[in-house]
Length: 268
Image (tube, rainbow, N blue to C red; front, side, top):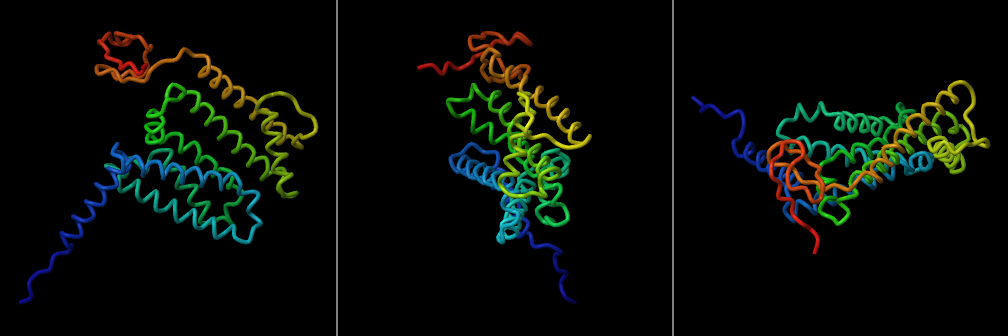
C-alpha cells in the first residue's frame, strides 16, 4: 500500500509565512531597510498619481495602453503585498482606501469600457494621504508641525484634479488637447476659489449645478486649510493614558485625562 501523501508541503507553508513576516516588517517596521522600502513605495505612488493627472493628455499617445497596463501590474503587486502584510485581510478589503484602489485597478484593466470614470483615478492621491507610513515618514522630518496643513493641501489638490478631470471628460473632451485640459483646470480653480469668471463657463443646467457644487466644496476645503494654518501649533505626542495625540508644546498634563506627560523637547 502506498503511503498517504500530505495535501500541502510544510516547507511551502513556512516559506509563505516567512514572506508575510518580511512584508509586515517592510510595511510597518522602522528599520533602515523598512524606511527605504516605504520611501520607494511612496515615490512610486507619486509617479502613478502624476500619470493619472496627465492621462487626458496621454490618452491619444500610441504607448498609452502599454503604460496603462504597466501601472495596473504595479498596482496588482502593491495590493497583493499589502494584503499579505495585513494580519486581517478581510478587514483590509473592507477599508475605503482599499476599495478605491480596487476600483482604480479596474479602470486600468478596462480603460476602453471605463474611460469616462478615468478621472476618479486621481483619488489615489486621497488614498495615499491616508496611508500611515506616509505620515510616519513625514513626522521624522523637521516639518512635522505642518502635518495638518499638508493634509489640507493634499485634500485641495485631490479635489482640484478630480474636478478638472470630470469637467474635461464631460464638457471639453470633444475638443481634446492641452488647451482644453488647461481650460478645465482654469475653470476649476476659478470656481473653487470663487474669484469669478466669465470667459470659461459650463453650458446648460448640468454645468451650472457642477459650478455650484464645486464652489460649495471648495469653500469648505479652503476653510479647513485656513484653520490648519492659523490654529496654534501643537505637538504630536500620544498620551499613555487616553492616547490623545495633540498637546500644547509646554503641556505638563494631558488636558483630556490629567495624566502627567513627558513631551520631549526638540529644541537645541
